[in-house]
Image 1 (tube, helix red, strand yellow):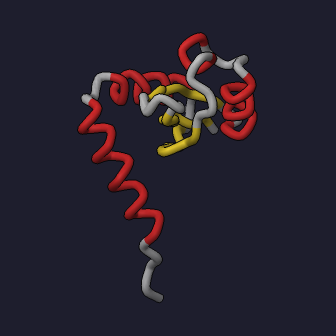
Image 2 (cartoon, one colour; image 1 turned 180 degrees about the vertical axis):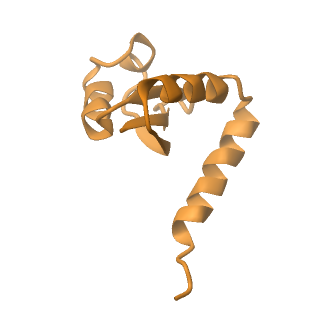
Image 3 (tube, rainbow, N blue to C red; image 1 turned 180 degrees about the horizontal axis):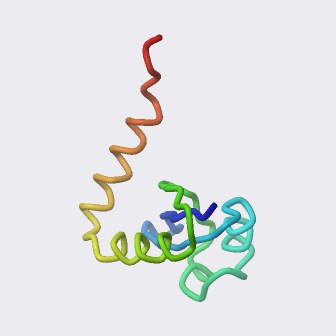
Length: 90
């Protein structure tokens, strides 16, 4: 299982990436070992994550997310937060 994720950096910017172990990757970002972009913008925190069945699917989705404007990313993040907080009625 692969994950596409968006993190918010300490300067308020977003970074989008893929991984098959999100917790490990987040630790790498915050230790300055994951990407050149986040190295000088630590700490980072995960705002969005989406499961994908393959690396190929995750890479394609990553490209689509990177093409979004900041406002579109903020809307996506907000919608996902709303989805997570709503529990189904039994």
